[in-house]
Image 1 (cartoon, rainbow, N blue to C red):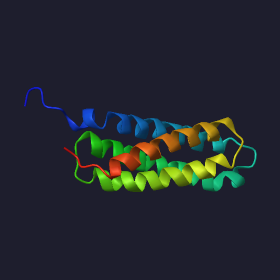
Image 2 (cartoon, one colour):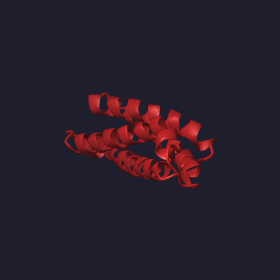
Image 3 (cartoon, helix red, strand yellow):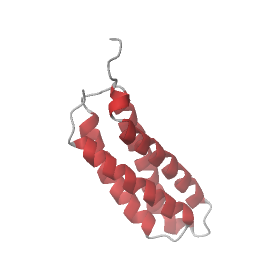
Image 4 (tube, rainbow, N blue to C red):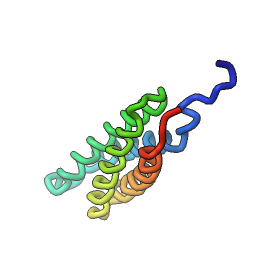
Length: 118
């Protein structure tokens, strides 16, 4: 179909938010491992890893127009909110940057969760 709008174009802002969040979460988890008290960062690291994974999955499902994308985006929004909440507890710049990305992603995914894939 020449000229047809592709799913990755329709959901571009959500896909980008998911990709940005996944990158921020991977960076945050890695930076947390370099902190003096790594034990205190355990929950943050675990949530970062979970969030990065679900964000990558959501991005891929939206990119190909999967009918499962809205459901996965709903879960993604929940995980992003929990990750942001945990990151906000830490003063480290990488945690605050991650929390910002998670909050943006959660907002985009919440919109997507109510949408239907074309």
